[in-house]
Image (tube, rainbow over all chains, first blue to last red; front, side, top):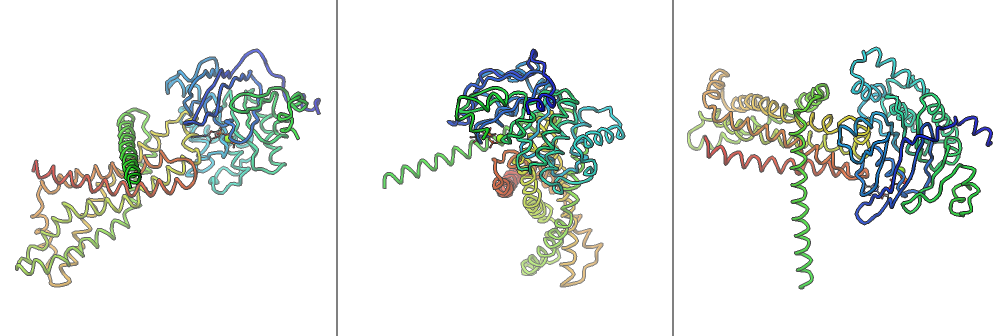
Length: 256
Length: 263
Ligand SMILES: Nc1ncnc2c1ncn2[C@@H]1O[C@H](COP(=O)(O)OP(=O)(O)OP(=O)(O)O)[C@@H](O)[C@H]1O
Ligand SMILES: [Mg+2]
């Protein structure tokens, strides 16, 4: 299986850090969620974050795209500290990042075509209608759902929504993709398909990713490196094999 | 005894604090609207779509209420005027009360119920399901796309709906008059038009812009700031209606005072 994983996961360039979080603190009132998170993601790497429900995984990646103000710390993305950027600067970084929401967050009032076109038309204004249509179809083809182009989000199943959400994330060809539980709530076969899709995207577009998941097969398949969040800090870090054999019983319990 | 008094005092303080807090937040929200409304890019397509939804889609409702307003007002006023032998003033009276007060306020209240709650629920559910966050992370300004377009649309459409309700109300009045007698349309209309002066139309129309602005603004504010969880969508819609209706009465009161002062 080690062999298989090596084949599936392209080697990563461990020299250049694309995302670098230093001493991140975030509290909601008296609820201190993050108490000094430090993490680095290198170019081309898939980093998996594990952790119990409510441990602050979603909060961490929301901070990376500036959806939430932070209390203390530094978040360097492409070498700039995004916590110090104004809205314009932040938006310049955001177009280079794709974000897959935990519940896909498709725009309910728009068809699948418009969900994808909405972002595309706003950021690439000189595309003709035909080029927009072609790009939408190309991306939908990547996630295997070209036939859903005219459907409304309410007509899609959970797995389809996740894929369309992923397609919408891909439409601007982002350099970083942040996946918030891409496989949660899906059957094992669909989960595996999505995991394979994530690896395919990594290879095809040379993306750097953070993948939050509770799904161990997905973590094993997609992750080059795994981090476990506990009590507001990174509790353990390593490859799947290393953590599986960890001395720490609590860490090992994830892999049972 | 003393303890309940203190706790009562405390709960009043908390209530007042919350109220002022909310007023502060609404003011900031409105300020943000004025800051962003003039900045390009303009979301023309969404604005027109909202005008269609808010204006055109409310027409049936406004038609029915406008017609009934005119009809009922005529039927109710007739006996009183007849008592003073002033029945011939009926068209003027109906037209004046309709245009100055009844049509603007009733139409605005109807729209607070239909439009403000609709916006509150729509934006509330977008907030709860992270659709607003999704726009934000794809570097699209959700405030501009969702809020600015809707507030502009209500500010423009409510006055038009009120003018339309005025016209329908006058027709309702004509039918009301003819239930008890026979007045020809030409005489009726000329009497109506004769009685209406600029100082009736102008303040009445001005205040409808404010009605429209507040209907849109409060709906957007409640939806955009909905808390997490599905039940907050219902809450947002509900409190949008209540707050918008209340603010319509307050604006109306202020408008009447101002009209008295200046005209
Ligand atoms: N907007 C918010 N306001 C207040 N508290 C919040 C908010 N968002 C999250 N929290 C709190 O922050 C903590 C972490 O939330 P987060 O969504 O990051 O968890 P998570 O690790 O992603 O969990 P899950 O696996 O269930 O998605 C939770 O205790 C939650 O109550
Ligand atoms: Mg989460």
